[in-house]
Image (cartoon, rainbow, N blue to C red; front, side):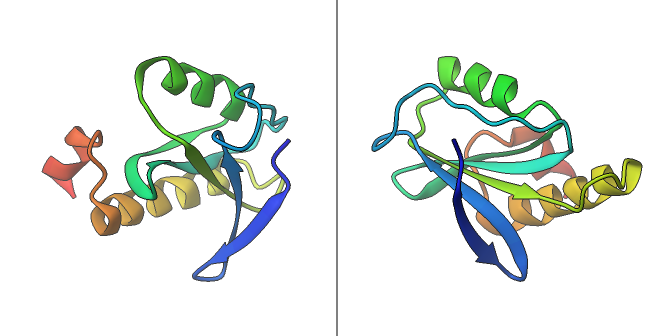
Length: 108
């Protein structure tokens, strides 16, 4: 379970450490989230999803990472949450320059 709350520029995020926790990621929410995959404290991918668990486990099959940061927005704001999540995604990609966000690097 993700219960490790932190703060990044006024946005609450949760941290899940795959090294010190079980490799099975559990997180139940259908709201949009922005997530950052890290390997050795370096961002390797930033994305947006409404099915966090499924998306993270898919990444786990193809990418080597040891931490996930999840940014959650207000509940029940629907499309507005998606816009906030995508805006944060673009800003994080621009600032963190993750290795696997190739398409966004061309357009941001």
